[in-house]
Image (cartoon, rainbow, N blue to C red; front, side, top):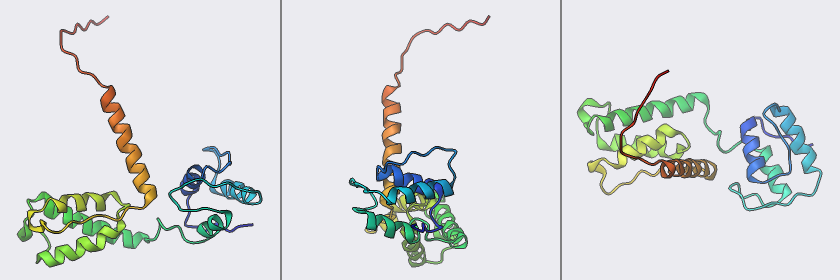
Length: 183
């Protein structure tokens, strides 16, 4: 029986099942323990792996990946709160016309150090927003703050953008008179 690290949530395990195209039937009614059992049952059989974002190519790689801490959950709650506070301070600086005087920052170096710190947590939406806004700052023309995003999050963002583009392409605008009647 493989022990799956407690840092993997139910949705993380479902994402892994879907991305690896594992032959496991699951439903929304399954809890985390049920999914653990289904994965353990599958690991007793021969598994074929396809290209995936986790770079897992065999059964041993999957067992190793699941037994270690989830790489997406490396922040504790307190650490994430600290990252969020820094993001809010950077965003405040940016939305106030990049004015250091009304921000908490004393120098551009201090601001740059905070941006370099948070960009390693690019899976957090506020980090991506702070980096995007800071990249528009004219004082940092030669510096780009690119948040580090895991392949799983990148895939989700691409799917979301594709969905938005498909919705926008299906909308059409027509001009003319519209008659609305009420019964």
